[in-house]
Length: 198
Image (cartoon, rainbow, N blue to C red; front, side, top):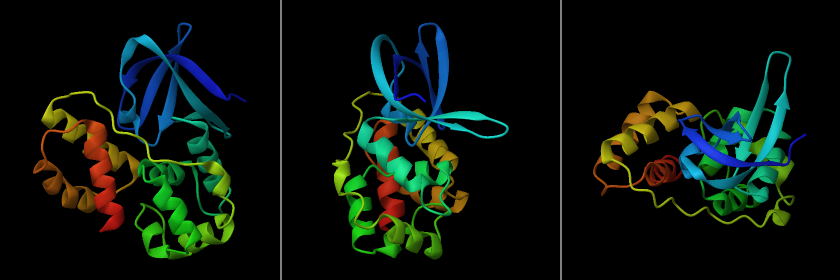
C-alpha cells in the first residue's frame, strides 16, 4: 500500500492528474483535479489510496491526510463506491459535509450525484459521531490564471466526470458564465456550491 507519492504534475484532466515520480507517470483519480497545476519544476506530495479489483488497479489522490481519511470512511458506507466518494469530496466544504452528517441533514447529502435518500441515511447512520478526528478545513482555491473559456469548459467537464447530469451541468453553466474570470478550480467550487446548496 502507498501512503503518498512525491513528484511533479505533468497532466491535469477532468478526471485525473498524472504525477511523475522518478520517470514513472502515475494516473491518479482525484475529486477535483484542478486543485493541482502542471508544474515540472516543483515537487508536490499527493496522498493516495490504491484500490485493487479483478480487472483494474486504481490510485485515488488527496491533498492531505484528512481528505484521504474522509474518503476511506465514505468507502466503508454501504452503497458508496470510489466514484461517489470522490464526487462528495469534490465539494470542498468538508466542514459542511461533516456538519450535515452530524446533524442528520439528509437533504444536503442527497444533492451529491448518485446519492439518494436511502444512501444519505446510511451515510449518517454509519458516520455520525465518527468524524471528529479528521480536523477538516476547506481547501483554498488555486491562484493560477487561465483563459476564461477554457477554465469554464474544464470545470463543466469535471462536473460531468463526477457524475452530474447534463441538465444539472447546464443549469449551473449559465450562472458560472456570468461570473468574473475565475480559475478552473474556482469555477468548479462555485458550481459545486450551487449544486449542493440549491
